[in-house]
Image 1 (cartoon, rainbow, N blue to C red):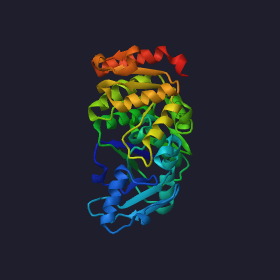
Image 2: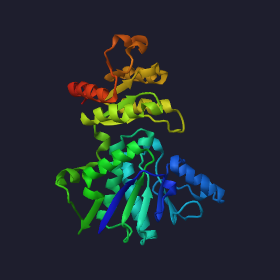
Image 3: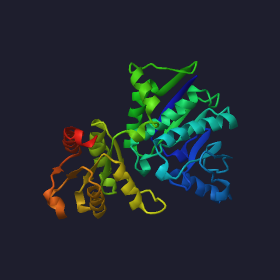
Image 4: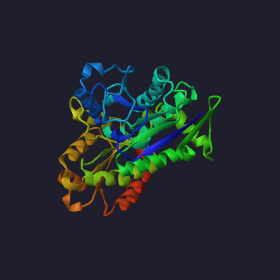
Length: 332
């Protein structure tokens, strides 16, 4: 059995696979919400779609603007608790559900889950891949399945996901013989370890929480300056994104900071939310590293704290990595 994983830098609503895989996280978000809005126009009520965690709804696609044959909604926990382990479980459940309902499916489309609400991008992606592989390895999947597609509109993220995928599987293909994965990669042991542990052991890994402004012009600062440095140093990298959580987002911020081994705070532009998160970190006595693009914009008591300045994203990555690496003993 050979399955190919493909990353597509394209709008998932314009794709043409057999099944569109969606989640219902006890509310609708992102692509899930857009599909629900389209279903609503076709006369579907929310009650026909919602499902409890571990449940699912399979719908023969009634939307003329979509080329999919079927829509599969899987019920999961709310986003606050939809962690790496549950992402892995979600991916496996998707294939096992289809094995029973649509065994002749050849292609499935999905998005990556996790980064949109603050989880580590690559850890979340690897957890999803591992869940799919769990189902493939046990042959509890559609018997004619040939390809799984990940759609991502952001070109930078799609490039990062493709790089991550290539680090696991050469040519993005998975061959399974007698319940064993056949690798063409020289890093077979490393790949097996990733697939064995990711998701199951992710929440026990050391993590950095990043406090920074929500703005498009800061995306590259986060992904290539801060995230690269944190990952190189051996930590997961998490933050709070602009997902419309039900209830107080402050509660979720506190939970993330409490869990983190240390905090990286970008104080550029004197963003008040970032200063608030720094206050929470100090209240919990969390080690905090400050970075800023203009030292003259520092506010309040942090003037007395050491702050790493940067003129470019590459400079930020190198400076921050050295700082984290030199302080590892304090963080773990």
